Length: 100
Image (cartoon, rainbow, N blue to C red):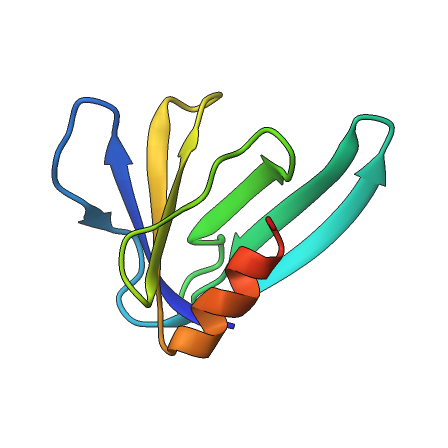
């Protein structure tokens, strides 16, 4: 999956871009005693650190699809919102299927 990565604070209405371009998004599943935890990691090859590194509880996190390609959610722990603008509608659908 390929996406642009965005963030916005709780009191901010504007999305701020975290990636310069589309970057690969890797999703790793961890089946723990509390359910399924998905680790989302997006890494820009021009940077040493990930653009996005987030652990998302599949059951407790509500995902929203604003457009065919843009998906976002609230990270309660970090008190911010993350958004992914996928390169293709099919990528957004695959991502949303992880939370169905």
